[in-house]
Length: 115
Image (tube, rainbow, N blue to C red; front, side):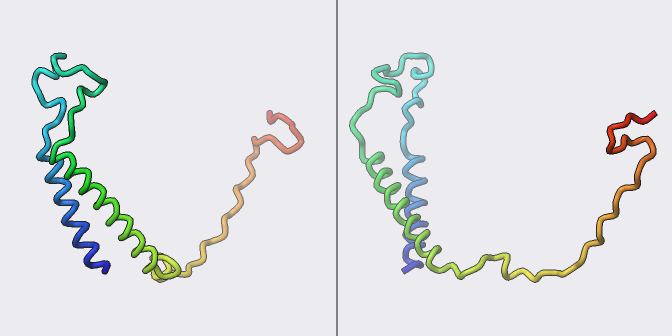
């Protein structure tokens, strides 16, 4: 079942890329750059959806659903623990930090100012 979902997901993603590249953008006209484009709304006049835009919406919906399905399969297959649990651990003891040597000109805890 997961293999079938992967195949559908890859085919739909390729179709989605193709459908988006085939569409004509709203600002692609040369006149739109100089203000002669349609100004009926903020992003231009909205016409009825054509075949390409409806097909893109359907492909995007199927892509979203297959993504959710693959996420479901991935979560159910995950074993307890993570990838880092499989990495061998080297046990090495670090040397103990050495205290810093006292400086002669450093102020003492009593609040005296050094001379």
